Length: 431
Ligand code: SAH
Image (tube, rainbow, N blue to C red; front, side, top):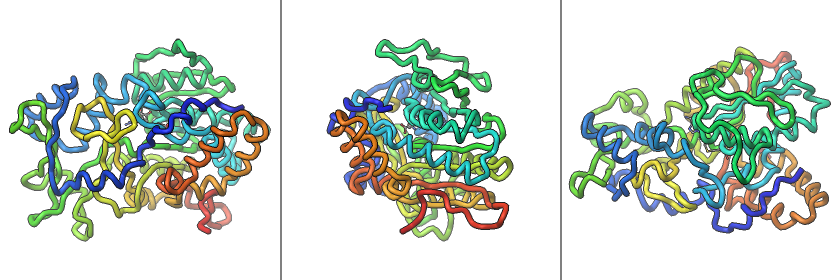
C-alpha cells in the first residue's frame, strides 16, 4: 500500500509554497510599488495589448490570467509539481496525509449518521494523489462505507484533469496515459471514469455543477491559487493596486500602480474600520465557500480546507514560485506559479450564517490527533525498506519550522445536530 515517493523526498531542495514567506516580506511591501523586467511570454504580449486598450488591470485579473488563461495559463498545460516542477505539496510528500484525511471524512460521515450516499468533492486536485490515497482507504473501509462513495473533482485545467484520470484509473505510466488531454470542457461533467477501486469519478469546472446531495468538500492548496484584489490605505482612503505597463523602460516591463480614485472593488471590499494599511481580498473564495456552506445546510455534509493562511492579520502575501525558488510576481507571466495566503477570517465571515466553522488549527496538531504516529509506526513495520523516506516525509509534514505550523486546517460543519449538541470535528481539539 506504499506509494513510492522516495525520489521526491530525496530532493532536499524541493520547496513547498509557504517556505520563504519571511524572506519575501522584506522584498516587496506593496507601499513601495515596484516594476519588474519581464521576459517576453505569450501571456505578457496578450496582457500588454489588453492594458494598452483598457488601461491598468486589477491584480485579481492579472492573477486569473497568469494561472488559468485557457491558452497560456500556468496550470493549463503542464505538470507543475514535484522535483521537475515548481513546488511540492503535502499529499505528494507522504501517503499518510491523504490516508488520514480519508479517515477524517469517514469518521465525520458516520458522526452525521452515515447517510446512504457520500459525495467526496475535491477542489483543485493537482496530480490526483490526495484523491488516490483517499480512495485506497475508502476501499479498505468498505465494510463501513459500502458503496456509498462517489468522487467529484472540480478542476479547470485540461492537463491536470488528464493526469488525475490517469492516476485514479491506474493508467499513469512513464510513457503518459490514454486520458484525453484536451477534453471538451463544455459537458457537465466534462469527464467521467471509474477508479481502480471501482468508485465513479466525475469532473467539473465549477463547484456549482456538482450534483446536489450529502457531500464532503476537500480543498488542499486550492484557495491560495484563487485571484486576490489588493488594496492600499492612503491619505485619500483605500486605493486598489493595479498592474500597468512600465513605459519607462521598454515594452517588456510590468509594474504595480495605485488606482487614482476608488474602483468598484475598493468600494465593495474595503472596510473603514480596517486596522491594516494593506489588504488582499479573494472574492472567489467567498463565492465558493458560500456555495459549499449552502449545500451543507441544505443537503448535509462538511468541508475541510487545508492551506497556508492567516486569520485576518497579514497584508502583502502574493508571491511567485518557479523551479523551487521565489520568482518575481510580474516577471514572465504564465511560466511561474502565483499564490497568496488564505484569509480564513474572510471565509468564516462568508459562511457563518449557514454553517459552524472550526479552525484554523495547525496541520501538525490535526495530523497528530488523527493518529499520524500510529500510522507511521505501522508503515515502518510493513515497509522497513522505506524507513528513511517515511521519516523524512513525517518530519516535513509535522515539523513546526517546515509545514507543521505553516499549513492550517479549517472545517465547515452543519449547524443543527438532531440532539442540539455542538459538533466537535476530529482533529480540531485545542489542547
Ligand atoms: N490539491 C493539489 C494541487 C494544488 S495546486 C495538491 O495539493 O497537490 C492548485 C490546483 O487547483 C491545480 O489542480 C489547478 O489546476 C487547480 N485550479 C486552479 N485554479 C482553479 C479554479 N479556478 N477552479 C478549479 N481548479 C483550479
